[in-house]
Image (tube, rainbow, N blue to C red; front, side, top):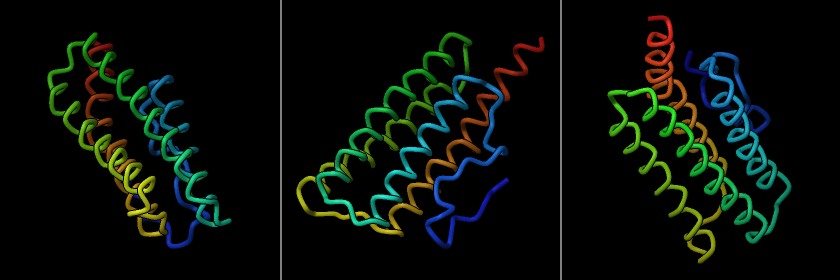
Length: 144
């Protein structure tokens, strides 16, 4: 299910049951990623300083790295055949967040509705795309 990107900020980074992969640890981490995204949305809404916004983005980058490591360890352990492609997606997503964090710190970027919507689309797209594929693989493997 592809939920359209929120037109207003009250619905950005909202968990949807359709995002569930039925893997407890991954679903919990995905919810946490979205919660950090909602913090960014709130920061934009109430006008947090660049330093406070940077701290949230930094936390998002660190949490995403930990989450990606957990996912990749699970895939490696279970012999997921598309691990390399999934890792490449993680690396690309990480690079985008790290670049935004650096640009934000240097004053070359700022938080905007468009940026948040783009981030949400990227994150949710990953949940529903490649994460769904590895989830299906893990569930099929467990059923065998």
